Length: 486
Image (tube, rainbow, N blue to C red):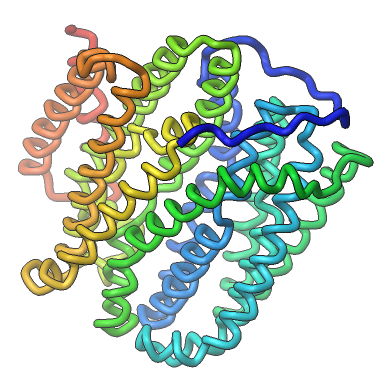
């Protein structure tokens, strides 16, 4: 797909150009530091709620935020993420582009709120949980407010204000953790958690609106002509995201439909998302896209490959060892974090941890840089077809574990397809597409670490936390020694 046209205009807004460097990780590390500040607090949200609520009520909480995550991601239709494409290429038109996105997100957010209120009884029936209908209006309001405010960090990153974006990530995540945990501890009712979440989302929306009015002053006005170019870029990407979200959440919806909320809670805990992964991958991918767009605008296509190698290698330094350690210590982690009531989630978590390895390859960002949104849509349709075709069979053959296995297999094929397209876009051979030697060394070190951990675990019998600490030290020492010996 050709890049969407940029329509020239005399309206100007001053912007400080980003430093001319190909390094993704200097600004990305700044963004990661902001999100890491809140890592512990946000990670404890489900851990606290799993201890306060019984499995059925915790399953209801997980169902509600499964709905929130699906609708929140799909209803944007690519308009918020399109700012990563347009703002670095046309900084003087930033105000109208941002205004277009805000109006679009406000409209779709209100549609989502109305739809959830109307469809609440049917959704409750389909997800086998009558309690949902009482809470869905609150989730609809939360979706509406969070969609409106989601452009805040995108604008800051696109305009090179990485320190402010880092601070915004940190404060927002800390406030979110407090809004979820404190009401649960005080009132021990899910409704109070949702009310606090809505209040926080309203305050964040107000802060974003204040910042944007000061940042763009008189230029924060929608532009119909620019909107056409945004929609031309965003809608195919939005459709790709729609299919991606459907395929990613389909196993959880199917499990929720077929089983009771307590069983769904077992599956949801097994599909635990490690916040550190998103904290590292999301800002890294965001900065990678901005840097790649800048280099392409300068006509330096070869520099894009260097940025891709740098991004992949440094994410692998974190994700390869982390994924391997979580796989080998899956049971200890689940029991320590969620208590023995969720021990059955451990095999699911072991399989699910493979998704961390695949997160190393931020192929989606590269596709968006080259405006390959239609190809992303095709890849996601392929992934959806695989999951939809095999999910019922996998649940029948492997119970809850099968749903996780199908998701991992489909994601492997998705990444492979994107890498094949990248090979053509970057005009390189397969040997140059990835930093193969470095990735192989990291994988070998992780495998050696896993072997040592298994040997240590066969000799010790400890409760989960001491076992994690002992095996963690053994794993880290082995990996470091292997790397030093190279």
